[in-house]
Length: 133
Image: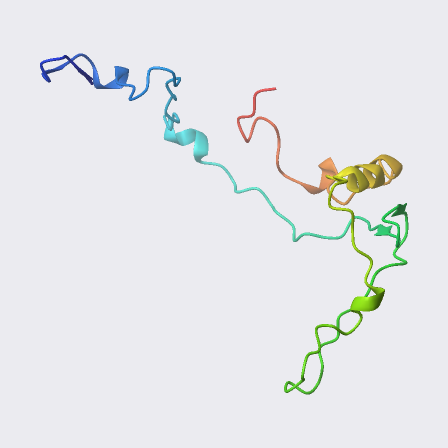
């Protein structure tokens, strides 16, 4: 709805935009409802597709050599000493941004290996999701 200077309401309510710089967002079209009457797609539980490690100098290593397992203490009344191991702690350089470079490097190395989410194991298709590409 547009308001005139004298605060009277005029025009169509769909034309109202609180800020002139923003683009109007179109509503999600739900008609015809029958297009949603289909079998729900099958989803699998997440599974591990691979792993990699970072060594002490934060370099990519294509194995699980730095993988550690956490085993909680059996006694819940543990006096935690937070300074234990601080003298051997290796501080990461906060000025060097790593982003997802290591993950992308792993994907590049293993792009030809069979992934568990191949097209034969899923029911999702581009036209089911109304994705326009």
